[in-house]
Length: 123
Image (cartoon, rainbow, N blue to C red; front, side, top):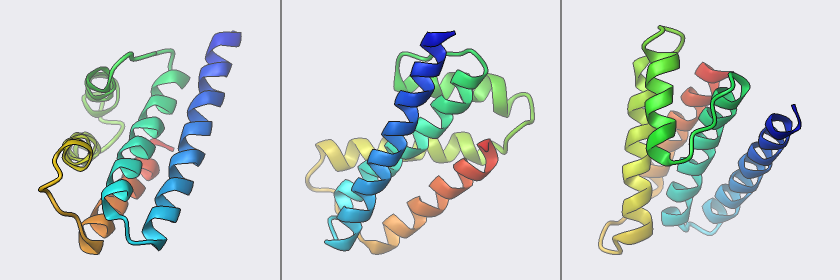
């Protein structure tokens, strides 16, 4: 199945790229971009798990719905994974589109914790 393996490879590239972006932006205290990167890392981890099961969501909402249906509802991952991914999505939209919303180190620290839990639950 060439398409699925290519999808996996692409997802892994996104994870690495966004982690590098997160690290670089954290070093310069660009917390807004850190928030965006953490959402994309978290979503890519979920996409990876879904793709390994044969699911190929086409939207952010699709990732969330399939996560809920095939992992949370089945009891394979904690409900917090869904909640954290959804909250990261909302925070990413704030970071990308609402200049009046500020983020600080404590926010990023919290979101990093969420990202680590998502990774741990889906590995």
